[in-house]
Structures are given as structure tokens and as C-alpha cells.
Image 1 (cartoon, rainbow, N blue to C red):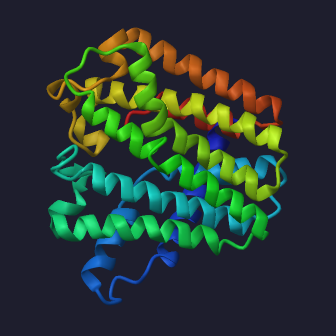
Image 2 (image 1 turned 60 degrees about the vertical axis):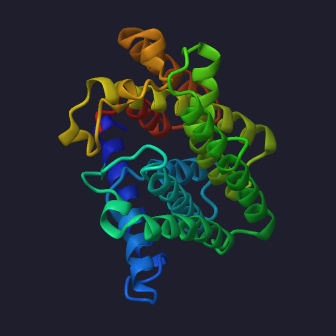
Length: 295
């Protein structure tokens, strides 16, 4: 299949995720309306749906036995991701005014409602995943993977290290610690969850999880590069803030050219690993897109 066909497949998957996510979230007029409006604003206001698509693609890789469950699991991951963005944008953390080309949730609804919307989206993620319709033992494994990847050992811990590292001298170990936890682990979990719902062998789940970590590092490096080189109108968010806050980033340590090269190398290694599992090229396409993003 050509790259154009893969782009079409990605578009179709994104559309399916957007439609299902809109159906799963509480209606905006359900009391308290301010909370539910904020949840829908945060979760439905654009975004690449990358994590959901990775979940769906991994499920297909292992036979696609429960496509509806994989779609709902992907939507659950998107709810959790939306919660992290809402909280990351708050003044106490990254203090951003723009997200996906629109005012951030706290700018639109106020800080208190934004915090509560993030809390509710996190809870919604696990509710959706628990009810996704796969066999119970597979749901249990998916819940375990999502909970672990989003807690203190990984996502939240990485965000904490990112905040505490501002102004510190960047080292390769510190960059990888932050990037691996803050970003890469949820990417890896998205693939693992799709594989778990399909009933993939444990060895295959471990391999696709490691591929996700590599692709997730490539994605975060490209995000770091976007902050240095990107155009705000295309990115849909404020840029040049990493340098202002002296954040620990890959380009700050290695420069632009090596960062580009390493992002491509990591994505290629991730693609090699999933090819050995039988990938027909779709995950390869997704990984390459993650390493070359412009928004």
C-alpha cells in the first residue's frame, strides 16, 4: 500500500475515534453543564488521535478480534491524554494560553473547572476502558497497563522531573528519564493495550511495548524540535517556551541536526521491531510521521 493509502487509513481511523469519543463523553448539557462542557472542549477540540490510532493499529496487527473494544480503548487513552494536557497547561505547571489552536481549558472555563475537568477525564478513561467489551481478563490487563503508565512511575513522575529539571544542566540520562516517562510510556501503553485486547502473546506485547517506547522518544524529540523550529499557527500552541524556561530537552543537549537524525533512527528501529511482528507498513508509516511532525 502506498503512503497515500496509509494517509487515508489514518484519516479514517481518526474520524472513527472522533465520532466514538463524542458519543462516549457525557453530553455537554448534563448537569453540571460547566464541567461536561469543559470535558468535551478539552477532549474533542482537535488533536491527532495518535494514541488511539496506535491502539487500533496494534489490535489489527494481532488479528483484530474485538475492533469495537479496541476503538473504545483508544478513546479511553485519548481521555487520559486530554486530562494530562488540561493539567499541564495550568499556570502552576506549563502556564500555556493556547492548545490545538484554541484557548486552553483554564482560559476558557477558569482554573477550578479546568482542574475538575481533568480529574473527570482521568476517571472517564478508566470507566470507558473497563466497559470496552473485550474479555474480562484482557480488560484487566489493559487497565493495569494504562494505570501504571500514567502514574508516578511514568507519566506523572516524568512531568515532575520535567518541572524540577528546569534550569539544570541537561545530560543524556536526564533527558531520557524525562522523555521516557513523560511521553514515551503512554505511546508504548497505547500499543500494548491494543495488543492485550487482541490476546497477543506476552512476548509479543513486550516487543511492541518496547517499539512504542522507541517511537515515543522519537515523538518527544520531534516535539522538542517543533518548539525550536516550528510556526505557532501550524503548531496550534505557543512555542519557544522551552528555552525561556531552560527546560531539559533533546535539542538543548544535542543540537538540531543530531536531534533530527536520532528521531529518525529511533522511529526506524521501532518500525523494524513491529515488522518482525508482521506489520504491513501502517505502524511504520505512523512511526515515521511521529518523527517528522510539524504540528
